[in-house]
Length: 537
Image (cartoon, rainbow, N blue to C red; front, top):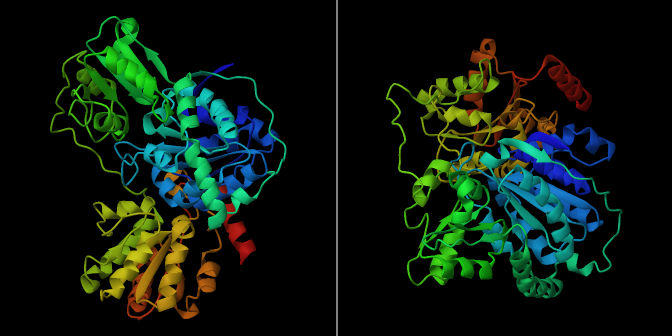
């Protein structure tokens, strides 16, 4: 059966067909569609595949490890910066190993279409000393899921699959295979390896290090790493992941005239690299993201300056690659890009018309002349657009949950009128621990939780914070007199200004929950939210 699907959807169907029992994830572009596809899949529902959104990436990965512990196959999905949040369990489960197959899917975002940085997740895989797989097209993404689970169970290690934005969000026809049945529950014979007290951890780490040769052998023999040598020795190309597609778009039907090494499994296959290096006069390394392969080969392998790529300037160090940049680097064609006329300008994103976040920022902006214009600490979500014109309300935007802790640190330094703005799902993702820090010291900060009852920025997924924020804040220790509920509407503007002004004068932790459902939610969804909130109160 062949279907036209996104790269993310191909990977998700591959997981279902490979015997998946559970997917755990926190929504984040460009990875979100993987989990959404499984949640919508009738097949996944009939197979009872677990697919509820987790509170954050760390809890998702720990739950996936728990399912793997029982012998079943599990998958955890996130965007690249989400792996920072999950890095604790990620590094340690490489040491403990797994039981049932466990695949970690991370979608990187070169060019930062919806992210704070361009970090390359292959570094994390190398750091953890586990296998890394990097599909080059949609069919690869589907097929590689079957292989990833088999490899994970063979090596007793988690396997990292790295996607990138263009592959995640582009479509192609994909041929699906016959579905494998799910594993049954089979608990590990020896559980001591999962109990990483130092005496056990030392043994497990030694075993992990000893697997290095096994991982390299697997990579050398992998059919995902392909070497084709031609009679023409002038240029050899080493390409990984989606960059291989860009190379092939330029080569086209003339591929037999070029020496090409495709890398889709790591560690880097040394013997294949030596072959192409010795065969060709010049080597061009084409990889999306950081110059990981190029740097390794240049520093430890290349004595003649034959290796070219991002470090040598043939390819750009930042942003995404594309067929044009690859074509220019390989010499297939010259730069023939057309200058964009000055009249054509980029249109920055803006909050939706009628968004409750806008009403929150209008309240803050009215008080800025009184409190200062560099006091507002922002967070990750739709409301991050408050940093842009015409609002210009937010002064900082670093990572999930940083608004509260940065406001606390600034207040510790003596800054008055420190305001933190955080969304509902971000608050439960990473804000609660920061609030506990602030409550412990009764820091003089005002926290505005702009609650739109959804993980709105990534497609309005259900928020685990729904109907629980007030109880969470009281449970953490916020004084009831300084926990205010408001409805961010234009008609309530003056009332909310006075609430914020009063709380800013309080020399301790105060919270204003601005609760109004996302304007893009359907009427039925809003009614469902109202009923759920009422049932929890």
